[in-house]
Length: 157
Length: 389
Image 1 (cartoon, rainbow over the protein chains, first blue to last red):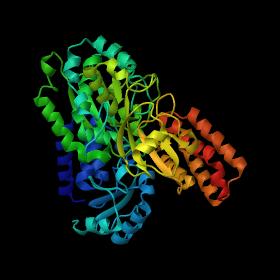
Image 2 (cartoon, each protein chain N blue to C red):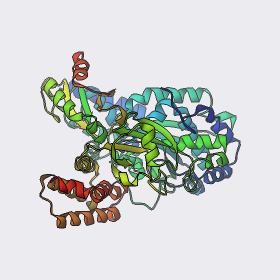
Image 3 (cartoon, rainbow over the protein chains, first blue to last red):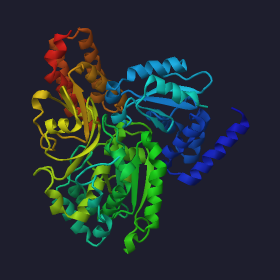
Image 4 (cartoon, chains in turn yellow, orange):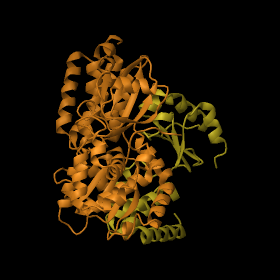
């Protein structure tokens, strides 16, 4: 990481602290914002957040690894989370798994080399009446079919 | 989409619960909620009036109201619909709770998967502040209350109230020992009431229409209505509002389910009800549910269903206590053995005993209820499952 990038990240974390406060309860909102903007929370980012909140870096690492939407490793710009829980399973999620792996060219749990996509499973996301369902970042897609997957992926940056 | 319902899904019933509540004394509201017989809608069914009475009796200079919108139980999506379509009712219920227990701050803990609702909900809060239904001097009274939205980050266990509070405080979402209960030692150590989204919405209606009216709906022991999220093998999946006491057979008829073999009521941590028991009723005293109803037709393999549930629990166990962390892995391993035809009856009985131990020895609700699908599916469908392998 370049020194200028490090300085920029520190400044960004300082700005987030100005909004969310510097108490321990601000940790999760700050981590969520860094995750959204950078796709992960780097070692340096973890140390800076710990320093500015005056807690041990291990505490920060512990929290990140507990929550499935936070990550210490870089993820793709589009994180696809397919629901694998029972209602979406009954609605045919297995065919959607195969479609996504074929269309994107990586397996579930992996990220494409160009960092465009990450394929993950999610547990029940509350779209059980409209399954199979998936999230791409914050956006929900329901009633998935192989054809619909192709249409959804067509215009992604 | 037009919704039909008797309490929450009938906007004519909504009235003005917050303004009505603020005309009453705190004790009167506690009495009214206790009188209504309202029980927690998240699934555990603790009487809401009692919880508020304990929180209001606790002595502290600060108190908090938390709305549990970490709706993660497989097959549950009623809170999503409530927040999407009737958020004002939920926020009014939170303000009523704040007034009753003496809190000035409320948190809506929204699961990360529902982040797309955030902008809309913030808009609703802004509108309510502009209407003086939140903020300083709510409805012209000497009462200040505001609501902040906090997001979860994908952890099922955070739906457990003490784990949720840990998460709000910026920690790993690991459940605490109870007692002390959150009504005495909750968020930041201050008295806190944690209630479900549907509970808050119900309170707002109860305060506008009265406990007497509310009590007439439902059964003697389960007053009022329940939102159920129906998914699986039926023609019309979705959220329905039913009076407590409706039988499972009636429910299946309503949603257009045919050739039904079994119904999973209460999600992964609920119980599996076979066809022979479809006469049972949805109520706290019979088949209790937080709102999830998953329908399986004759073509479904119940072992496949069970495997899906056990994979869910293995992934979502927080790992803090041994019965849940190891027990769920053992149960999943057992399911895989059954699948391959390698599980002896003797080993199955040992697994059933392990499940019963987990129910008593686990620290929080997740671990205590995680063996439920294993025990109920392998009790009701043992013959079917083993005769195929």
